[in-house]
Length: 361
Image (cartoon, rainbow, N blue to C red; front, side):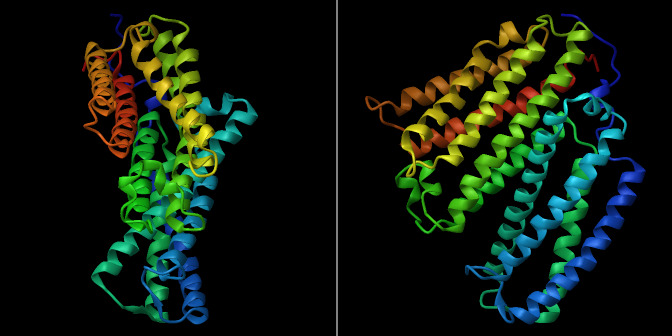
């Protein structure tokens, strides 16, 4: 296998924010805290004695909405500026339409993740403070802290975006979004039907969270593909990846996977079952192509990566066998969740190995 020097690749030259970005993030957080205090004052005056969570009109919903707005503003502003930071300059060479799509997807995911994370946090707090009303003073304090912390975290997240960071963002978003949909669904027995049943409750927040998570995650995967393409081009140029078509083929498959994932949320099973099933099957098919075609597409990757890929493939085959009617060990819900976990688990492993391919340390 070809090797390169042990220094980080250009695409990963800035894995953490610099001192300037850290300082700017604090100032942005302080400004958002002031905005949050004003927002909290208005909420406290216009909607007094809100419950923490558990109702359609609760403090959790107002806080989550405010967090989503500041997350969108912070991610738009900093992701646009970050293209001039060390290790991010390659984004300046992207076609305008691709850069716009990437920016939109990053903004949507950060805003959606902020909404879901804040809402889930207040739902948990509400379980410890049952029946506690939020008076105006605490509305001001909590909103200031919530919007300030949200802005600080989002600002730092987009200021040094790398393939590995985006992978972590994707995993966190999928996990928090689906778990939030599970615990807020109006049907506690949803798991007796199927996984996609979570997205079938019309006008219920849990279904909006579930379907929105899938759509936003699909958009993020398409952006993810751009970062993968950049990393793979560098590896191919360094002689690590032996297939010169890999930097085009693998990202294209990720784009298709992302589109299929988004379509799973766009077409809930109760709205358009054929489109929903085709989208889910298409995503699984791209996963299998990437697994089975790995030895051809990804020649030069560490040997352990291929061992892990074959393990994922074996787990997929075993899951199918245990699900088929003749065996019937897995329910449809269990099968869907396992396949979902395998796909995103493999993505995390692939990205980790892509980041160290060709290194000897």
